[in-house]
Length: 169
Image (cartoon, rainbow, N blue to C red; front, top):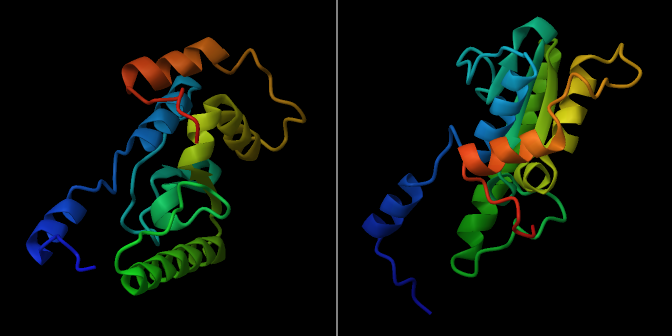
């Protein structure tokens, strides 16, 4: 079956996909900021232009969409039915580029964290706890007094950013 989209229409649709300031990224940034962490965004001097850069902790965070970055065993990392050879090649390039960027950052002495969209949607507080545990490994257990309570996390994620957390991933 021929692809009904013209190359111009396909190009326009692909151009509408965000690469920065995605909803998952905004949720994580908002939660980190509420916990008192300050960071920079997409530093061009670092490989892969990480989504969040915490220079004080020498840590970078990539917030990956499951579809584009091929989250293993995730239902959102589905295979498009049209033009499979094109998509498989594109996905392979994305995964290889992600691996190269992580390796180069690690070689430069940066700690690299990857947060997956589906995991952040499912439980933003758990992801926040993992990130904070990585940033402060000297703390044996995190003090929940320092974290926003679960209701506040959900309020930030749902109301302010209109992030649909009630969807099953």
